[in-house]
Amino acid sequence: MIDSLPSGRGCRRDVDKLYTSTVAKRGYNRDTIRGGASEWDASRPFSNYLKLLGRLLVHPIRFFELLPKIPDPRAPGLFLVFSSLLAALAWFFTGGLYPALAALFLPLPLSPILAGAYHLIAWGGRYGYAVTWRALAYPFGYLLPLTAVPGLRWFAGVYAGAVLLAVGLAVVKEISFGRAFLSCLVVTGLLLFAVYPALPG
Image (cartoon, rainbow, N blue to C red):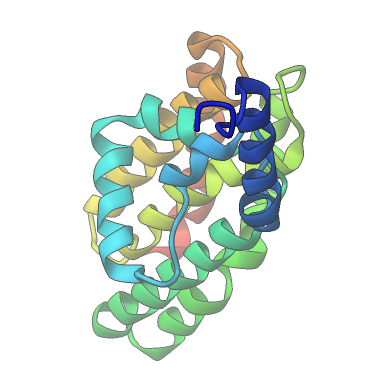
């Protein structure tokens, strides 16, 4: 009976086989497998949306620590699409049809441009542009529905762009928080100044 039990090395090989057959298909490796907790699950969109929102607001450092550092765009991209739907619904009731259409179709193609600006300010940090985009996607997605609320949109924009994203860049890109915060504050301020004339309230 005892001889039939696998050795420690054999157990490790079995675990590796389990990893490669089930987990690798989802795009993770052994260094990023823990990060699934900070990914949006499209099979449970509303409950997972609220769960991730709570984690991002209450424990932002932990959220970005668990964010997979991989270039896979699927989960953040679908999350932005879902957030755009919520934003379009909010804008339809507060601003009408055309702002709702803009909120529906612009965020996803706009996100790589925004990520490019934030990637430049984190130049020299760890990981590449794709991971910077992943770090931006979640704060940006949660900001989208709030842009339909006059007054609140500016506070939410500063908090998402200068605080949450600064934490994200500091954790993900492994740069100092001071550098990340000051840089994000400048970029976010310029972006809000640019869109101010187009948004009422």
